[in-house]
Length: 261
Ligand code: LIP
Image 1 (cartoon, rainbow, N blue to C red):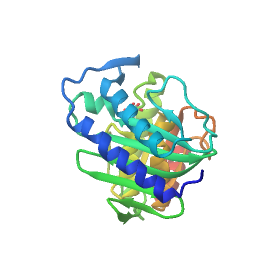
Image 2: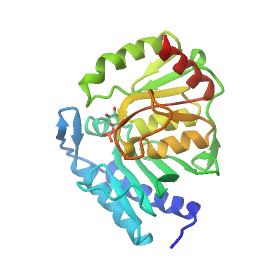
Image 3: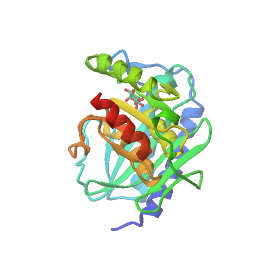
Image 4: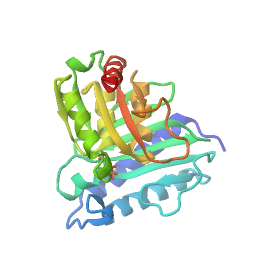
């Protein structure tokens, strides 16, 4: 059965708004470590994911899923696929930093066609359908025209990958010397939305998973921005972890030139 993508988008937004109550009501949050002490998960990540999957499966019975807290992932080239990060910014969530979100992307046969990212703490819903533009709470958003020198930049520290730390902070210093200021906010999906809304000119992180960037990349592109890996023109199609850089066309040009220096 084929679904209109705007119809799918409103299903994703409804699911995020209802699951967000779990995040806002959370208490006694206990962190468990995954690949290391900086890679954490909570019972709330699992419960939010279960609720989202149940709600979406009820409306789209033939849907498949690729989710952060799933042991076995469904096929990325499935006809109907939801790519879910139940709580992006889990470390923030665990430590009471109210800066996390729910991120869902919808894809058909490997192409992302809709994205919704909800920050419940400030009631901000970022959304996009391919070809229809990007929105914040229903209002159109676009990236800034500014280049790096007139921009604030968000970055991610790739905390799960100590082998990337030296390069990350060398790059942060290079960018800092070329922009207005740098921010480490702790939630990649929201960093991409910050770029899409023109609040920052650029975001980069040297290692992310598909669920961290799938929806945000579409929202940036539909807001007139560019999004790709740092060291390659296109994202991997096998769902493997990758670097991500996103920004206004002018800021991306400045950043890619800066990489050559
Ligand atoms: C996190 C990202 C963050 C990155 C972390 C992790 P999670 O996602 O939002 O930018 O630095 O390594 O990927 O694990 O909270 O969904």
